[in-house]
Length: 308
Image 1 (cartoon, rainbow, N blue to C red):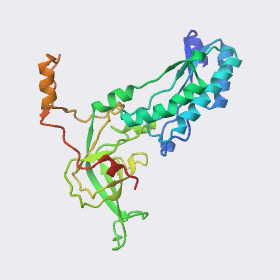
Image 2: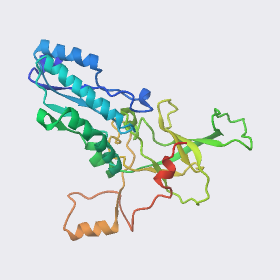
Image 3: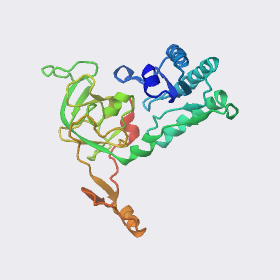
């Protein structure tokens, strides 16, 4: 706050409220925002330094499945607005953040949870401008990430894997798969409390194929490098490929490591329709592929996303 006062004293500031208890993997994610107690302290500090606090922000990550998170976040934001009014700040902006993963059903769920709270705590009569940051919603569908399995382990459910311990005939196997990409690469958005999409298989499987409890990990052997803690998958082999759709947001690496190759894929029908409309590309695209139609995943999202 004092650094802002020195470098940019005319800044219009937003205070971000911390949203706790949203995600199962919250202990491995990077938290952002202030508690209500800290918000009071920051407002008093801003008042002392002559800074202008014009609003409040919160961010409910896409991994949060509970609509009550928006209830608490909007309620806390209202408390901060009231604190600011007591100290003489005329707040007029509420930023409800992002965390919209590009799936229509999730956006509708957010709207059902958020709209009644905004009507109750920030009606139009208050003059508060409500904004959002739906960047991920617009770009997530632009990319799909394909990863291959480079190793696997098998153990009975609830039993730590040991290579020399054979499974008994009554044990339900549990598989751990190691991928050629992980949280320190293209799945880095998981560290920002964002959810990892449901994977689909490239290869075809029969309807009678059994499903097993499975977990997916990156290749670093780091405890944080867990892509998916639990999901249901058929038994896979080294060299099999999984596809994660809706990975266009925050998945391109910024760590200095080599990026995975990018392939541009479009259905032949869409390509010819674009040409008929006279749309041309400014630059030629490398690795451009035309396919008769988009490949249908061999597994339904509902089947794979069922908690193990």
